[in-house]
Length: 309
Image (cartoon, rainbow, N blue to C red; front, side, top):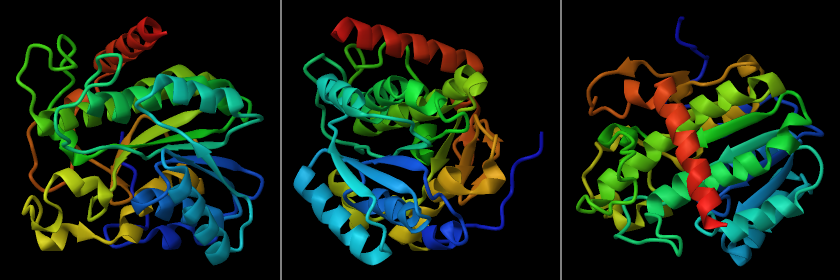
């Protein structure tokens, strides 16, 4: 099956991708949309006429972002709702409060390479936030997305997934020595696997799910990694926030991706499958697209969430 190619690329911006797209009457949720590529994605989608909900942990920051989006886009259908992805009760409250159909869910929020931390349930924080919280959110909103018949789930992953496959026997580092980058890599692999399995399970409902690498962007996500001085990427690999939001916007809104799911995109195009680390921010590891791994992770995620009730 040929890789999907689009007219957009590394330097494309979210605004360029959204130009000419009409999502009037469509309802969108973007997690982590008070800053960084989350708010840039929300802004681009608001320009299409969509009804956009910013799902944020910090309500004050979310309200400020919404005020700015309304002022800059002229779209008054921008809302704010509280969501702490590391807290199952917060996710459940968000789901319970949702009314009506949902057309696009952008799983954007995340943490990167943070110091060793665990949730009240004993879950490693990066896995809990980046994967389990979004898993609970998406499965909780499944009926709302199925009501549309053509909904999309967009999952922000990272080339960091090449740093670790999913370690099913020890996802929470109870036996392994904790390493922030291995934990991050595992959580980002989980993001891709979720998209693969959600796409398979929910195809009958008309729901498609895709994952993506936004690129190397300087945002609050890098607060634990040294930021601009970390030296982990070359200067020419750095994108602006608007460029970083382009691939998310493409997967959320572009008509040319109608019916497309279970894939991983970089720079607005489908990535090639690789069998070793690329070192260039491109490519998707074969283990991250493996259907057996995806099904196993889904079962593990359900079991963990059920045991936390």
